[in-house]
Image (cartoon, rainbow, N blue to C red; front, side, top):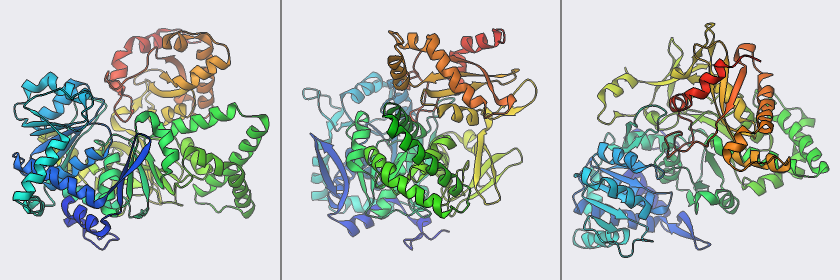
Length: 612
C-alpha cells in the first residue's frame, strides 16, 4: 500500500471522495477556464460540483445503475469533464469516444460497452448516432451540449445539456441527498472508466480501469515531479485517451490546479502563448512540430541571428548532454548557458508560450532523443514518460534534473518493473488494469500472476532507468538473422523537419527500406523557396528535387547507424495519412500493419529495383 504526499492511502480512494474533498478545499477558486467570443471564462470548483451533481442526479433518475456504461464524444471542453465526473460519481462507467472516429467506429464502442446513455457535442456527432440508432436498443437517451445547427431538431430520444441540468435540479429539490448517497456507494474496485485502446492492429479493446487505479495514479503521477494547486495546464489532447484524462481530470481533482481548454485544434499555438502553462504535455509529434517550426523560422532569420542562435544552442547542447549523462557541468559552461538563455532562449520560450513551463512531458509514443536534447538545451524540462492504458498511463518517468539520455526514466514510486527472459517489460502496480471488457482471453494473455505483460521490449540499466527497445511484435529479423529495432531508426528519421513519419521495413529481407511521410508545411515552404513547381500533394511527393531532399536527410541518419541498420531505399507516400481512413491512431501513431498492407506494391517495388 502506498501513502502519497497528501498523507492519504490512495489505494483505498474513489473518484467521488477525491473530487468532493477538493471542492470543499478550494470552493470559489478557479477549477477550469474556457474561451468564448475572444474572452476567457472562469469556472469555480463550486460551480463545477453543482453542474456535476445536477447531471449525476438526472442520470440516476433516468435509470443509471451502478456499473452502467455511458459514452461521451466531443472535443475538449468543460462539458466533457462535467459529464465524465457526473457518471463516475453516480457509480457509472465513463466511456470516451474519439471525436474524429467515423460512425462505424462510434457504433462499435457504444455497442460493445452496452452504453445506457450517450453524450454528444454537436450536430456532427449526433449525425453519427443517427446512422446506427436502431442497432443499440440498450441506449436510453442521447444528450447534446452544443445546439448550434440543431435549433429545430426534435427527437424523443434526444435532450439538451440544459435540459438534463434542469432535470437534475428538479430531482434534487425532491431528493436532496440522492446524488451524495450514490457517491457513498462507490467502491475502489468498481469500474471508473472504460478506455478503448486505439491500437495499431485489430479492433479496439475496452481497458477496464477501477477507481483504485485512477485515484492512485492521480496521486502517483505528481509524486516524483510535484505539481501545485497554483499550476496551470492546457487541455488539447483527446480526453478519451488516458494521457489527457490523467492531467485534465484525475490529477486535477487530486491536486486542485487549473485546466484551460483550447478554443480549437487550430488555435493550440495561440492559446499556448496566452495561457503559458506551468506544466506541459503532448504526444511526440507536437514537440517535433515545435522543433521544426523553430528551425524553419531560423532559416529565414538574418545571418547574425542564425550565428547567435547556433552559438547559444551549441552551449545549451553541451550543458544538456552533461546533465543527461549525470556528469558535472563546468562553471564556464553554466555561465555561457545563462548568457545564451538571457539573449536567445528566454525570448524564444516566450514566443512559444513555454516561458513559465516548469516541467513538460512527452508520452503515448516514443520520441527521438534528439528532440528531448533540443528542448533540454533551450531550457525546457521536457521529460519522456512511458506507460500504456492498461497501466493507467504511466509506468516510468524521469525526475526533473535527473533525465538520462536515451531512457524513459525509472519506475514511478510504488511501481515494479522487471524484464522477462525474452526482453518483454513486465509491470506490477496498483495502477494495473482489471482487464479487457468482455474479453477474458485477452485479459489472461496480458495479466499473468499479477504482472502486466506490456508487449514492449526493453532493458534496465545500472541506475534502474528503463530503455525501450521496441514493440515486441515490431522487431525486424533480417534475412541475415540480424535483429533490428525499427523505432530507433524511425525516431532518428523523424527528427528531420522534412519528415513527418517513417515506417522501416525489412523483416526477412536482405536490407532495410522505408516508407516516408513528408512534413507538408515544411516541404511546401522548401519547394516555394527553391521555385519547385507542383500542383498537388502527389506532385510534391514525387518531385525529383524533393526526393533528393529526403535522400540527403536519410543519408545524415545513415551516417549515424551501423551498416545493417541503414535504410538503403525509400519511397515517399503519394498521399497523406488520415485517422478517418484508419491509417493512423488518434495519437498520431502510424498503423504499421495497415501501411504494410495498403502500400504493399510500393514496398515490393523497392525490393524489385536493382540496387544502385
